[in-house]
Structure formats: structure tokens, C-alpha cells
Length: 333
Image (tube, rainbow, N blue to C red; front, side, top):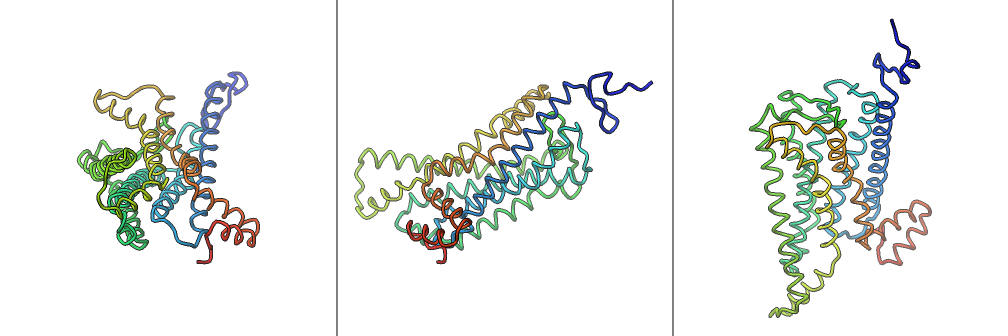
């Protein structure tokens, strides 16, 4: 005897009978993911378009921020939207191959972000450590080479699971596809060391040095080389130091709950059985792809001016040129 959806106050999809409560929960989670996908795409389209629109001289850090924007935009376009329907339906519906590809993209783009934050910290360290030679050390070409190396190396380091050495599984608690790293323990540990090791060490050391020098300059500690002292004071006044640190800090804060859960499960040798906490931890981390534009807008006057220039250029080419002249930036340079 078949039970109609009406008799159980629910709906039937693809042969599955879902209660009204579970349907409402699935719809809510799918709506959250859809809103998040739209927010990530719009925010990072603005970031990428802003930096590409301006043809004048850029600070080197802007190329790293552009790389972050591209990585987050790809996440918003290629990963997040694919989870909307499976979240409502309750299972992955696009096939094992696409699940594996999506899992690979997640790890690769995350690794690119981690490496990029490392290069940002190195760039800020050099700006403070060698303010008189910074422009000759950190050139546009060198920065672009480091970014190309980062994207290529991350893609290659994460590719073995994509080649069939590992399976991917759709996790119904978090509603994402994840590669099965437990089957490749040695490779997984090596990848974690190669990605997190140099990145975390560099970030901690470099920003530790930067804030130490800030405190030293503010305290009025004597610096014998006056030319160096002047250049250092001018460089430390650049808001890019604090903005870049806020970006790094927000990234690790966003992913902290998820990393904490994985460490807990590894130590306790058991799965943390609370679906909503699992879901919240994963998607809080992914939400970091949206936070960046808020931090950059609130802490960087240059970025605000470039965004304003972008919209003026879109609305009226002449007004865009006028605005560029007013702020001393020529889009045709």
C-alpha cells in the first residue's frame, strides 16, 4: 500500500518520502548555501574587477589580493552552487566523478589561499625589514612569478586523489563532497606539512616582527640610521600591514572550528555526531571567502577609492577618468 505525501504531511522526491520538518530544514540549509554562493560571487567579482579595472601603478600586495579574489571567485562559481540542490534533496546527484573533482578543487583552492597568505606576510615583512630596498626586491614580475608558482604547485600537490588514488564521499552532515584522506595517511600528512608548515611559521614570524617594530617605533626607541628610520616610519604608517593581518586572522578564525573538530575526531578516534555543528563549522570556513571584501573596504582607503573608480567607470567613462585624476590615479597609465 502506498502512502501519499499528504497523509504524512510531507513531500516525495525521487522515491524518498520526507517529513515536513525535515523538508523545512533542508530548504533552510539550501537557501543559506544559495545566499552564500551569491554573496561570494558578487563580492569577489567586485574585488577582481576593481584590481583589473585600474591600469595604473599597483602596490605589490594588490597582486596577492587579486589572487585571493580569483581563488574565492572560483569557489563561489564552481563549488558552492553545486551544493544547493543536493542539500535540499539529501544526497549527491551529480555522480562520483564530479564529486571527486569538486573535492579536489576545495583542497586546491584552500591551499592556494594558505600559500598566498604566506606570501603576503613575506611581502609585509620585507617592506618593514628593508624599507629602502623594498621596491627593488618586491617587483611586479617577481610577485606574478610567485603567484604562478603557487597556483601550479598547489594544483600538482593536490592532484593524486583526482587521478584515482582516492575516493570522494558526499557528507550528509556538512553537505559537501570530501576526498577520503584516511586511505592515504602518509600522503595526507605530507601534504599537510608542505602546506601548513611553511605558511604558519612564516605568518607567525613575519607578523611578530612587524608588530615588534611598530611597538619599537611608537615607543620612540632610538634608530641610528636616520634615513632608515624615516623610511621605516613611513612604511609602518601604511594600513596594508594591519589589513593583511586582519585578512589572515579572519581566515584562521573562520576555519578554526572545522580544524578543531577534525583534531578532536583524530584524537578521540570517533566522529563528532552533531550534524548542525558539523554544518556550521564547514560553512563558517567557506564564509571566509565573503569576509575579505568587508575587511578590505573597511581598512583600506586605496581599495575604497579603486572600487569607487570601478563603479564610476561602469556608469560613465568620463566620470571614471575624472575620478582617477582627482585621486591621482590614471587608469590609462
